[in-house]
Length: 163
Image 1 (cartoon, one colour):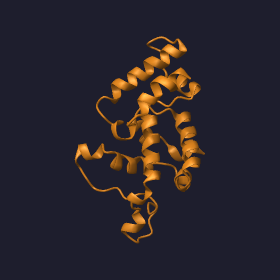
Image 2: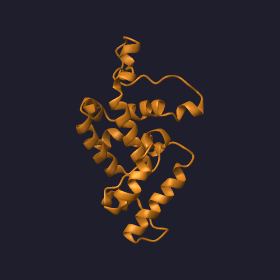
Image 3: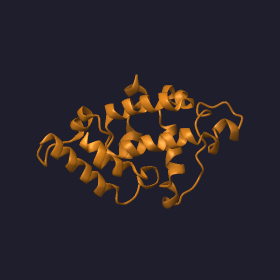
Image 4: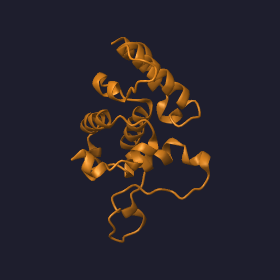
């Protein structure tokens, strides 16, 4: 309860727009230090399992959750591939990813949110019309995986892990 009242509220403030910043690694180390204090584990022990048992999302998992909720809340600002072209492809229901090679643009919430949303399993994507239900499913999904990085999320075999 102390974690959520003191640390979590500060951690989640503005995470949608600042979750990919250069300071996120420092904040994540602070979050792990807090978990170690709560559980009484040593510095060298892994916190991953303790995140799961305490039902606390690591920083990047919290960032993924906030990006996905941002995308579902602002659905009218995004276009699907089926709106761009009328070819029946397997990615027609995915959001259209704008082409841009600038690294600074690729860290923006709009661009990253599309990439994270498109990586979701199809059964979760279908729930995007109901915010409360998708939030519950996403929290359960992210608690079970406890992602430390966005690359870990993108490389995860999401289609088999959710089933």
